[in-house]
Amino acid sequence: MNKIITTVVLGSLTVFGAACSADETATNRATTSDANPAATTTANTATTNTAASTATTDDTPAAVRAALPDAQSFTTQHKDIPAATVSSIEKESGAKITDIDHHSYLAFSSAGGARRQVGAATVINADGQDFVVVYDSKNGSPVIREVRGGNLAPDFRNQFKGKGHDDALTFGKDIKSIGTPEATAKSITTAVKSDVLAMQALYGAAHSH
Image (cartoon, rainbow, N blue to C red):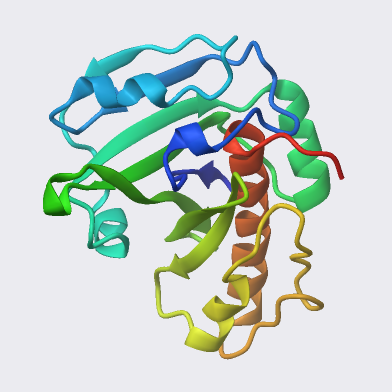
C-alpha cells in the first residue's frame, strides 16, 4: 500500500486552528533549517501539545525547493498522527499508513525585508515514486496548490488543484487517469487523499461538517 511521507502547510501554521480530529496529546517534533530557530515556536497550533525546537542542518528535499521557488528558507515540521486518526484516514482513503511520523516543509520568503510564509509541501510515495504535494491555506484548512513529480500529464495533475479534506477524491469518479497509467494514477490519488486528511487532522482549523 502507500506510505505517507508528508511535508507542508501554508499561510503560517498559526493560521490553522485545532485539527478536526487531532489528538491533543499527540507529540510534535519541530526542527528548523532557517537561521532563526525561534521561527518554530509558532508551529504548534494545539496549545495542549508538547513541542521542541532545535536547529539542524537543512534537510529540505531538492524537489520541495523546486516546487516552492519563491522561498528563501524552510522549516521542517514533524508530527505524529494519533492512532485514532490513523484508523480514520485509512478507512476513508483506502491507504495504509506505515509511518505515523508526518513530515511537512514550511516555506518562507524574506523578500522586501518581511518574513512571510509562501506555502507548505509534503512528499508522498505512490507506485514506487516520490511526488510533492504543495499546499495553500483556505479558511484555516490546507488545500492543494499542485501535485508535482514524475512525468504526470498536466490534465491529470490539475484535477487536484484546490482540493481539501472535504472534497471527493475517488479514483475513476472524481479523478480520472487522463494521460497517466491507470495503476499510477490510482496510487497517486489514494496517497494524495491520505495526505490531505493527515494535513487537515494535524494542522487544519476546527469546524463542524
